[in-house]
Image (tube, rainbow, N blue to C red):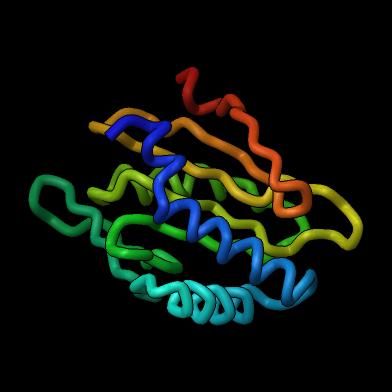
Length: 157
């Protein structure tokens, strides 16, 4: 499946719709766990399976060297990493890239659910890691549902 098919898939479309609904319903200012629980409820109401705090182990030469937990895993296919801060934390994109590279999953959503009141901000980054390559990203805005491709500094490494 190519990148365009992954972006346009019914699954990612439904997930983005759930993100928009949670953002619209709750607005800004809640803690991350509130948005996470609301998003889980919305995804479940859409008939999607969701695992919270999905464990991932990083192995080096057969030995576990690190472990981490994905915020959400939807349909055993899509990683969702939630952030509820006024600005995207430094390293958040690299975190998602590492999650994609350390797992067999090809799609990850980095979701910023703390939108400043009245501002149009980019909300999500969709990353792909097909066949071990670095991801490309698609940004979209909850406020205007506009999509545009962006470059990523790590892609030029």
